[in-house]
Amino acid sequence: MGAPLQKIGFLLGLAPFLVVVFSWFTNRFLENLWILALLIGINLLVTLGLSRLFKNNALVLELKDGIESFIKWFNQIIVAIALAIVFIVGVGAIKLIGTLSGKRFLSIRKTKKSTWINVSKKKSNFEEMF
Image (cartoon, rainbow, N blue to C red):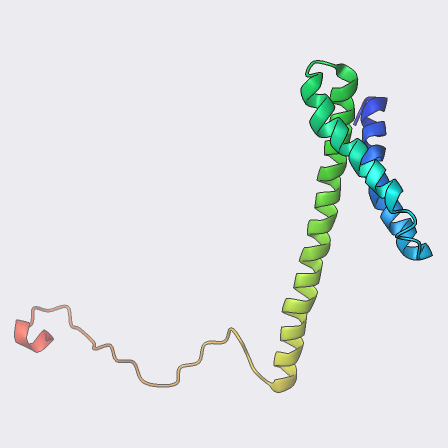
């Protein structure tokens, strides 16, 4: 993000999430719902409406690039959190339960004799093989 308008677009993309977090912690989500709707409407107007209406306008394109950079940044955070949760819950809990119960998940144990026959390299009769 180099241009100041891209930074403003990044903050414009961040603003609805800040409103949600602030409203959630102050227990005034329904009171601040109009602000959230206004900010989401501005984001949609910049990304969908104005960018198609003014295709070569540098102001709109830089704001759109800033909002898109926020979306990419936010997506990376969500993916990292989701993968951490999956790893901790999925792998860590199963490993803990397995060690407490005494199970080994990826160990290979030979339980019975093999059904394969040993074939010698010399020529043998066709009926002997089948």
